[in-house]
Length: 449
Image (cartoon, rainbow, N blue to C red; front, top):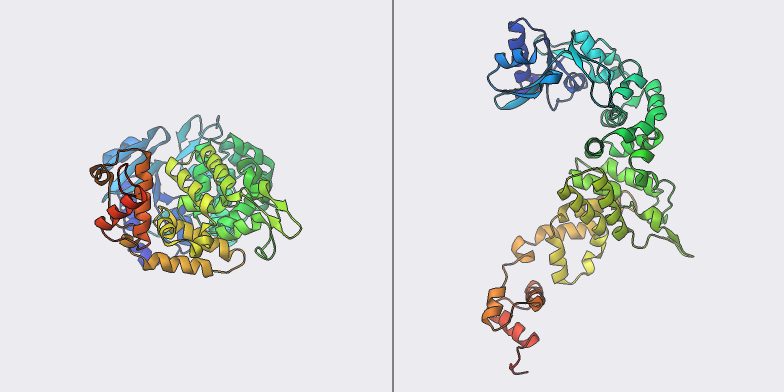
């Protein structure tokens, strides 16, 4: 195995080698496991390094100064090396899985037995970070060469142990651009309905990883092809076959359009990723055909409501749900921006989430008609206007209105909005001008007309 110098010199790799060497110096076996060996064989930089060892959790804690017990019943300890965390787990073989997620018991075992209980062969490799050698008990190296996702052993057994592995197979196939091996693929189709037994928050977290990663559109197509999508996101499955006006959408139906956008997205935030997926979720129920064209009246508003319901079902964080709802509700608003009055435009540009709204509009355009004129105009305007121009300090406050003789109440909001509108449109620039505008438009009883 040939590892490039930049990886060998990385702090993460050196840390993994340091932990491994210390464990071995005290008579224990230790290897880097999980995604790191796979990524190294693919010539990629691993995001993290997990270590498996013959040392028991209490023995690991005795060897390192800073540790955190994160799952000692499963043999897992977090070792902090220069404040960087490394998961160190004892080699284990799992007992029966009683809940489709966790084993009822575990027993500590040999490296080979540990590899045999893992999900996919490409994730069951072990790396010696000192000698730079790979241990392969399950044919993972061959599967990497042949670019395929295959379960370790019987696919029915592996998926039965943890139903979330059905979705994980899709994620790895999309992320690595691998195909799913025939028997593994058949088992996913056969067991697709069991995905409904997975806790909503686990399902939401796995979908987030898919949507934020590369080739998320391909992942959606695989989810549909394997029969998982109707059980996980039936509203997205319903997009298939929903025709769109060909002059605006030459790419095809709503599902095709959405998958194209997902494939084009470059490391989106979790909110943007779900908003891309759900921006047209209401097109199926709002589709209407007229003599001239296909219409989807009100799909943005209905889509925002549907997106909120879906995100809540997946137990996503509240802030993420609110941002997704905003992006879905407003994803077509940018096309109207060039015709907005200055005050409305500036308020629009300063909305929290506008940059993501701009990105979803760009992707929406690229995945359909390809016309980026509206996007370019908005982006240029957004970048040219300073923060002070779109959100200038207020010329008047509620205290100023009270000093002028106005009583606090609902009228205050109307007055202050009118003042800000005039300020944003360049009609007033100072507090005296603002007071004059207020006296003229909102005269107090007894003021001269």
